[in-house]
Length: 120
View 1: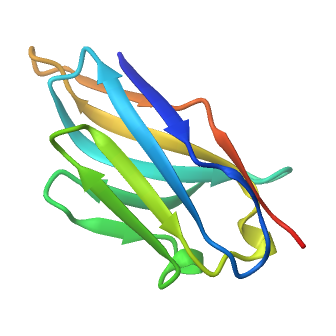
View 2 (view 1 turned 135 degrees about the vertical axis):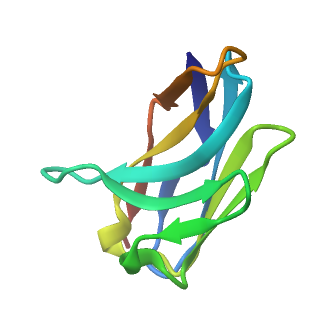
């Protein structure tokens, strides 16, 4: 199992910035992918950004150029720097990780979610 703990959400004005952080722990030997998803009220959960162990990143079109994902593979942490925030970025943000146990089994998990509200 993978345990993920997020921090850094909150209320910010349009145009402002926030940084989300997530730390992974548990019976996981190596983490392949870490990333962030979000879910707004009445909408499905959607990809925001992911990063592989090799540093390859993928972003939703709606956040390209404004959000930056980064990862510390030694510490099993992933951060999301969010700049130029817009009201439509308001959502609960979830950390995600997928990796492998020492026996080679794939495991993944979700964080509990952290609220990001962009409003004046």
